[in-house]
Image 1 (cartoon, rainbow, N blue to C red):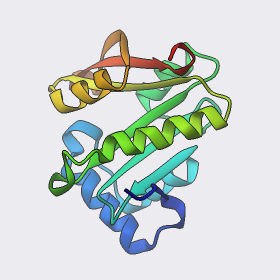
Image 2 (image 1 turned 45 degrees about the vertical axis):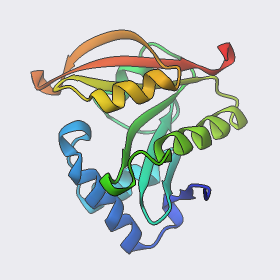
Image 3 (image 1 turned 90 degrees about the horizontal axis):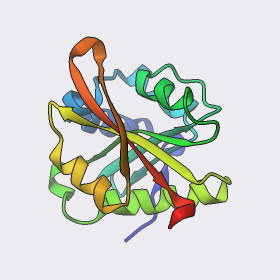
Image 4 (image 1 turned 60 degrees about the vertical axis):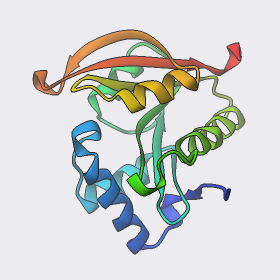
Length: 165
């Protein structure tokens, strides 16, 4: 299996493929335009894709300039953390370990940056059971829930303390 590639160095065509994958899962992750995706990548601490855009992961750390509602929730509670904003795997590539490979790379990067806490949220309503299973398998633990997006979603806030591993 190849290593994930930095999204900021991928071609415009590859970033367009990332956008298409994001839009496929917009109910779970929220809709983006190419400009807003490019802005997310530029302001992220970590943004990588796997293979021929078989999957991608975008994350921020506490010093990132990002106004996302869930990111702000973690920022209000933790001094130092990495927040996974979105992760997706193309339908044809699911079940091949791509999400786990992206997370393994993120965890390596997180440790190299001196972080020990990785955070994210998973939709409870509407439910996202595949994401809930993945994050449970990776050792994330729920610390709270919240109603977000003006009442449109309920999420579980999760943390993974890498220093406890």
